Length: 342
Ligand SMILES: [Zn+2]
Image 1 (cartoon, rainbow, N blue to C red):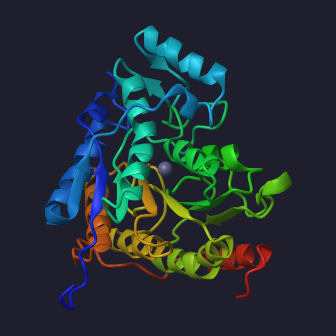
Image 2 (image 1 turned 180 degrees about the vertical axis):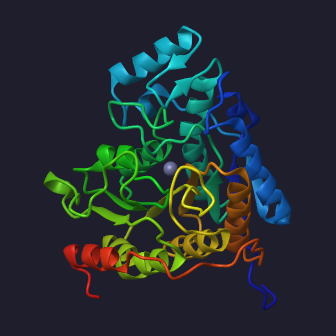
Image 3 (image 1 turned 90 degrees about the vertical axis):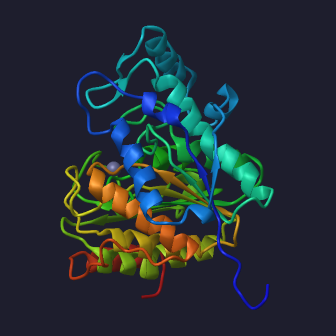
């Protein structure tokens, strides 16, 4: 090692076919988002630390760990018809089903590569996003649940999995899939009130999974200081107590203060701070990030670039960290509910 730390490497699972998920009329969840992520990482100057990898389409059996036959048949029928609206917010175009199957398969490719020691961390730069897709319903721009498919595959292989969701919106789909499943811990920091209207503090899991769902519904204007407190006082103690083998992250960047779909106060620097703390919770080779939301192209680009740079140890901060936002009381209340000493 010559006295030098080995540079952290990131496996980036992505594909131009994700750009084929689109429709004629404008929509915030658009192909330019992914191009903004790629550009942000490019401008961070960390190409030497990134290993690119193509995803493989997910199998039906892997999708069926998280989704119903009827839901998948409905998506396949829409695809066969050339696309259409799944609901008011959620569309399929001609290339959407292939993109969704690649997005859901990306995490499984990352698991194999990390197990083989090819990189320290993986980032699945995918679309459509996944965390709103429940076990029966595709919604909120999401067709199938990318992070849940990977978590379910790992859990079925005997691994303990923690999922931390930092998207501005509550990951209702992921929570739904694992709500009574003690093998998977789901922790979410999100704006409240906001779509989809779930994620209250008292949603803590059910049956055998009581205690393995942690929700921090943060008020409008919550900024980096509240998020850092949320990790330190609630999420990290609960994750450490759970002692996961793998850590998956729903990395939505729509909590940025410029994002048109939310009212939070985060900056690119905050995302870098938060993700570095999260990645450090598990040993190298056991953490996979999944792109979820982020709808202001500049903010998304800066946030993704700052985050990936921070993971590999490069100082690239288009924006400083933020502070002075509300919501610490919500964190303290959730920590107390989950038996964490404050
Ligand atoms: Zn979101």
